[in-house]
Length: 488
Image 1: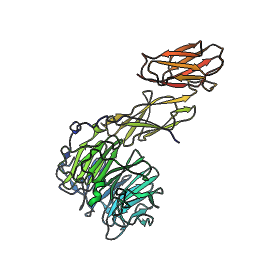
Image 2: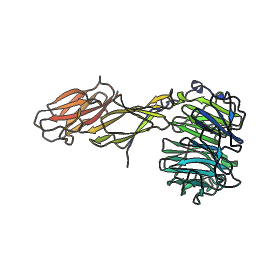
Image 3: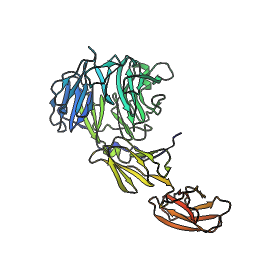
Image 4: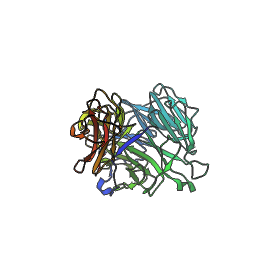
């Protein structure tokens, strides 16, 4: 079983929303906004009668040319934008100022969703399931293995897609870029203990791993509305609604470790601890029925029946960055361990012992050297957060390097230690002169302890909290570096 070591810095308490600013209504667009997208600083608002754009925070809006029908979902393929509309997609190559129609997919029916997976375009229809195109939308094929119902959302994570449906409440998954679909184990999210399924209106993915679903039901089934989490690709779901006063969910948005839920009448709620607690984020939000939530950089947008609101969420993102190691953090020389920072950043700067070693848009780093690793995550040009560190130990490294590694002949206890740590020889006889070398995580020698008896003690009262390494050395022995931790 793969061992996961996770270091997460989260908000210890969901503080008053007054600390995080308030929503601002963008002026001059009194429209029912059902989709949102930002392309090169151009904010696009999809409505029932086409797309509007602004590049000046809503001081002025333009009506996009070429589309006058509904604009339900917007996706981006390089420099090309795609919008799901009535019967077909439209495309734009100039940041949404003008659009041209693509071939009809299905007559007399809305296209509800458009996403990209690999080189395929995937769309969800308003009654005939999921369709896909392998030629950039020139031709479309119905995935007859998909549920032939009303698709509400499609999300993807690495190697995996999930589609949700209304009316049936089914969930389906695909691992071949939307060509073939399978019912998720259990098929969906049950209405209590019954055999019926809830209506799933929206989906989200946290850190390319955890699936999130928002449900909104009718009649007595509405008591089961809420936000549900799955840690096994949709096989099982856990409802988490503590703090959400209106549990009918219309839209979800996720960035890093912060999740936003747009409700049907209760406004917006957020959670920074994976749904265990939610807090309202409604100051300044005069329309509490949310059609669509969308995040660009560190700005959260809400599309409502009266236009668009936005709010800066940088303060919500601060102190939530996380870093996890996939596998053991003690490795052999020449091996590596995968380190994953949370997703959602536009840039990741990686540091080893406080020295920058790389910068990219990749939240993954393969660590080969010994020391403390951390990531500085940029969500926008002005919104930056730093993860806590993960210490990687490379066996056979004693400054940490040796020529002839041998199995450790030291037992270290207690570990962690708050006052005194004992180093005990594990060999039954040991007659030659020896010493124990203590190093910090940067490989600097801190102390040399002569070994006179089977047990040698080190007082750590005045040592800084952290990880250290011990190496037993004699004329014939240079043991593997062993980690021990000092706590207070």
